[in-house]
Length: 85
Image 1 (tube, one colour):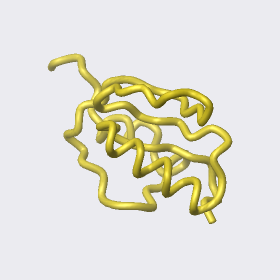
Image 2: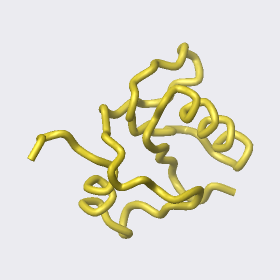
Image 3: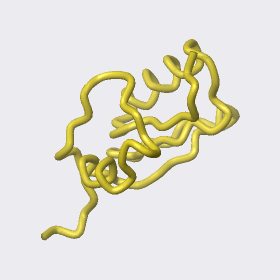
Image 4: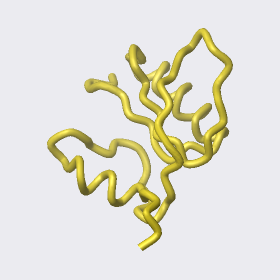
């Protein structure tokens, strides 16, 4: 066992009680490099495999923008508070 977290393990540990996938199909083997809290006032950090927490991100347009930026920076996942719409 490598000791590195993978997205499938994170999703399994937190389960459907806390997380619901709404866009795309998660890659369970994707390595997780850490956790970043999104701050629209800062230049986005690049942390390959990051799980990005979209604190204060509401509404489909803001969520879409965050997902696109996070994907461009190599993030493994974006988590925002429901509801998205």
